[in-house]
Length: 321
Image (tube, rainbow, N blue to C red):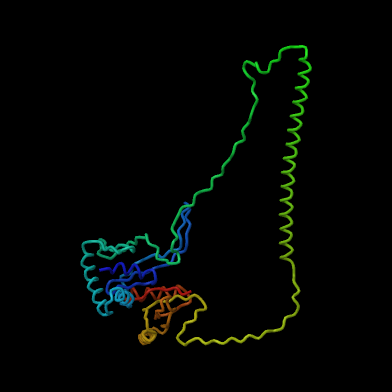
């Protein structure tokens, strides 16, 4: 049965994939990170497992029915059969979920989940992989010092004393002086040109800073403008949820039908949850019914802990932006 493959496919699109009577895989968005060692990690979704969320939300069964071309009820029966096999196998071995992770029982006979981390379920990071930055190495070129060394035998620098020896020696002196003069002129021209270039760069930087300062301090006379009347009308549907700030919601369930979501909220209010209301619709168009939507994270977490650990209710946390 390809149930683990279908779970992996759904984690790309949904924040929560519930397996009826077994548990739920949840995803959490993590931003891009750069470690101190120079490793770069793109934005990704971290996968966790919650064994308390066992109520069927219809996502897995609906997807399975489409893939296998069977009815929704038949898909539910096949999933229940597979879950029963998992519970039997988990007593003696580890369950492997392709691309997601591994589930097994620890020494206290409690379920533990180990994510593989090899698959990035964030579709916005498709094609991006982690890598290490290589440091930029500066290439230092050491100047070569060329020295004139005399030959040990000095045969090449010796002159045979002749009648015109004094004349040749004088000519060599003039040639040497001429070469030194040409070298000095060339050096003065080169360093002089470098100095002028550097001064030009300094002047350009000063001028650019002065221009930016003038622009920042400048005022512009745009004259008087006539008043413009703008009429804004709002035609939001009663069911649409408008978010003008960050909310922290405790989700009771996700539904494809708005009517079912409203019935769930009505039921929660009858049980005493006066803050129950619709939360933000997820990207796939599912309507979320919440125990409550709060302006602070602390209030939401307190209600979540009360529901899960005191009342043993199925609920999960959502940050709405």
